Length: 165
Figure 1 (tube, one colour):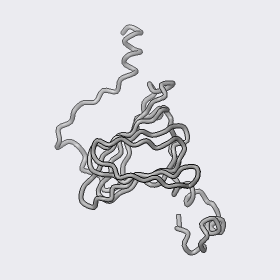
Figure 2: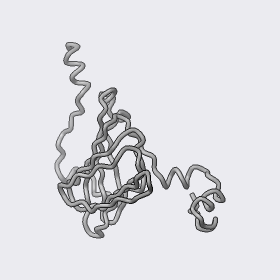
Figure 3: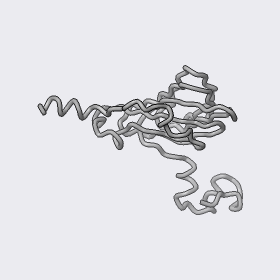
Figure 4: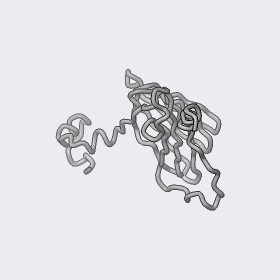
């Protein structure tokens, strides 16, 4: 094989269409499928990645940040409540309909929530980095071993209200 063909082939991940009956059953929990540098080495140096976000009825993508990229989200199916908190702690929210596009600024805490209890939602998100990174706020706060007393004081509550990890 010529070097040119080898280089081009490394840029392609072939997807074979599957018959509908071969597809997995819809998930019951939020699911994200990424195409980032970790999954697709051809993205090295390309400053681009994307994710497919599946929201079964009533599910959420918990509050999180992307430290190395903004997120441009396109709603393919359903409705989503989305929001982000700016650097002055102001909350911006919007309910997206099919075909809407929303931008989550780089590094800001944001979320997506399918409030519909009957129908799923599907979104595709693009990132301006091959490695946007994701910092889950609940995981970072409640599963990293931060002392419960510190958390209770930080959230102005008592230790008994801090979730057990």
